[in-house]
Length: 208
Image (cartoon, rainbow, N blue to C red; front, side, top):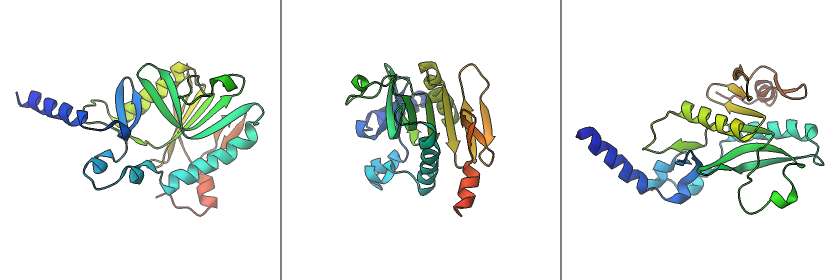
């Protein structure tokens, strides 16, 4: 009886969370902006929790600098700022960086709605979403679910950078996923590599 009551209370709390705090939707379940509980408690505003940390921003800037020379603007679109992706019904995801082929993402497919075709390559830096009180899977399970959804959709390669562990998850369809130390050279595309740890060291940035 006590377990049932707690479950009902948790469901009631989740129903009170406003839609504007939803970061993305995975398998029909809302994922909220990280820190949403502090907004509900009136300790922070929505704007307070929507921004990225300085470390996240520097890493994204570095990755964009690496990508721009490799992906010619005549052939590719390198999109950022939480690029929205409509994968299927009940699956609307956001990406820190998404690289599309222009031959696939044609002008007629660019509308006011989320893009509904797969990117070629996706980068994620940390976890910007937070699971609601009703969710039973862990953050690690959420990351794997999201990555698998993107690969099943047709994304060719997903990189997920975690600043806390200083690791990079590299996922491709039909192959074993790899978790690589970010101080190592990691292949991006066509033999070209990136090295987050080396870049931060060159910039004099301590990620600890």
